[in-house]
Length: 310
Image (cartoon, rainbow, N blue to C red; front, side, top):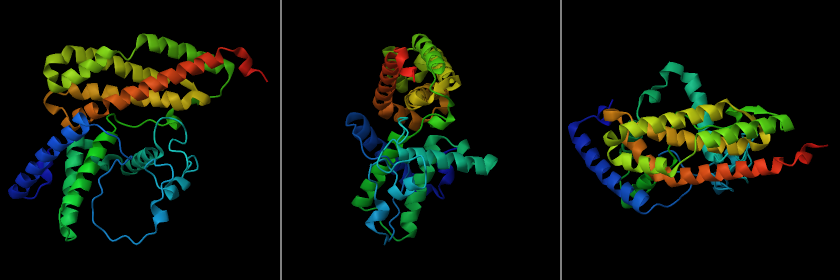
């Protein structure tokens, strides 16, 4: 299935193709040559509408991409803490992931988006936004165009490369007893030795993005490594106290694994996922290193048996 299947005429296809080419060039420059961070927003919203709601409606005290009133609907979230459960996932993205999972469960086989590539999803969303502008009588002026580009750029920066974004409530959580924490420590230390996140793996992903056919052998073995790593992380019993950092590591490994799997798809490679991998690679690595360091600090802390007394 291709983006063009959503376009009504050849003329519109040509116009959109020119726009997309220009947009991709802009994104490559802005997010690869000059990377920068902005607020979390994983969707496209450029419809010019009248909005009479008060400023309180848009209040996002902790700048996590979720309005305060939205977070108040979720008992586990704190409007003043951008990552309420400490799992490395901003609350705004946590909410969108939960809603997406609920919608997917509700629709079942009718969940059409599951059959689309990320490029096709973005193409459909972008085209829908352009149609909405036209139907509302708006014009694609410079301000709207800049917002449109920023939203697409943020979409790519926030794109979940794997099948899902993990949250701590999906883990096999256990009580923070001495026995459980030591068993977790021993298992994780073995995983760190068996599945190190190597610099050569990162170099491979960068090089293979330009010419994946040349690196298929190494990509297959590296992909197998990260798929196994993710499976092992998901199977562990995780003490509540370290669940946030464990989830953060799982999501980093999941992103790497999905990026590698995409590069093995041959003619079916999703170019948007490849671009997102390059854009997000630094943040993925920073997140994984941060999680591993914090987990090891936790191991240092529990090495003193006295903390379990009383």
